[in-house]
Image (cartoon, rainbow, N blue to C red; front, top):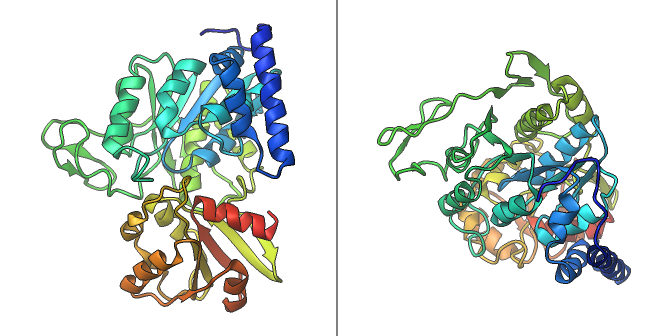
Length: 415
């Protein structure tokens, strides 16, 4: 479905009814204290008009962002950068399946840009419906083993779904799975954004051979599949653009992973004519993303809230926290939204927490306790967040939680 960005065609009576009913359902859900209501609102709207997502996107220049880690933050950074060029509608709270995306776009009738985070499983379908101008692909690693396909299968799905797309694909040249997924697209902008977690990228996605990884480079010795030459790169605290100019990254968000997200976001903004300097300056405004990185006061203590949903995410998060003896609270659940299989805990190097006083909470605190015992780090199991905070020695507390555990914590601290 092609449209004319900036000139929305009037919605059909059916589409208008669907939007109105969706907003009403969302309002009822909010009033009942069941969250933002965006998912139920979107489901109701799509039931009444199955083509609504495409209709709502037709006047927008759409950017889709997908990855295992960093989707929500990168979506937020791109949205901030593009606001330099016009109004933006975005699913800022991370409701990233078709219902949540439909709900978000229903509020964007006056917008010029739609910046949309998309769950990995739904990328090809949402791309079909929204005719994006840019698709940003950051990384692929193991996640929710009971729900998501094995990473190579997911990369293959993306490759098929994006084959011949008219969108500019902005993709991470350092992740072989992302390169494989993007290589079927005719117009790719490669970004050297780095890859900290390599455990899902030792075999070649093209032929199954063993990947050679000298330094930052990678290639398959059997079929010749190799790292493409990037036109954008993260280099320390700077983004290098295709002309070789270095632009300083100043973020309020911590860590190398967020600098990589900023580098990708600058490359996306440039497709729309927003210069790197302007894009990066606007990204500095972002202090927290849906509660992540917030420092909150609770029971007279400062807690920094950090989200880590899978092994790659935990690895990045360990590099963000203050060193020992900073107290650390770890919380893990295994509800539907987290994935019910906790075997991924064994892929995380918890030995990196040695020297920290550690308190363990959450539905699956005993699973985590067994893992920490084997890693040889000291910890205490606590029943509640309140007990863990009381037990923590002085200093700012670093709190790392997976998805629903993170939401539990935010509710408890009133964030």
